[in-house]
Image (cartoon, rainbow, N blue to C red; front, side, top):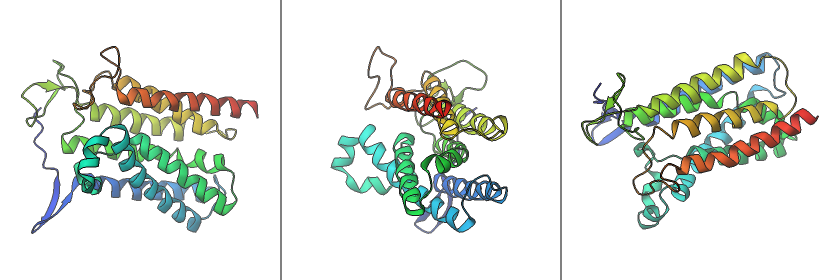
Length: 256
């Protein structure tokens, strides 16, 4: 398969709307819809208006945290020289780990404002996050970025802007694992009422394991490369504190 997808969804003169931005819109609307289904079932103690506020705060957290996180973790020197590029969302360059921190801060703000326990909201939100992870990775694939290592498997994809060598479509691997599989596990496997923090811990642990694994098939950012042992990537290093935090939250939940 040869990747020949135009990253531009539609052009209006010199103004372009990119698929990457459309993926964010789809994620937001889908998460809003699924979240409201849970609210109707009284699974979380907030109403639809509260949820709309929460989604707005989380959306800001994703955008700001994702971009700031990318500049710090992956492209700090370049962004210092070209600060305007921090607003070029259509070019990609969003860090999940930065967006994750942004969402945490958004939830903390919402919970303090609404006087609701943190884990009541985080256990609810993590069930929706895989929707954004799926659409985000599909957006990465459309952009032809974050490609994998060369391979001879039958589903290898050639990215012509790089070379003519079939590569692992690691964007799709992540879309499947972090998006579809994680969504199914959090929403359909764990259907019973869990203790506070347990659902959040499952998300952190499973996401970290999925992302850490896929990083073995993915080419690291050229300007960063491997950070240790000729295989450790920045993505894997950032997964370690998430995994440990998940274990800590699981211990808290099991101890309640």
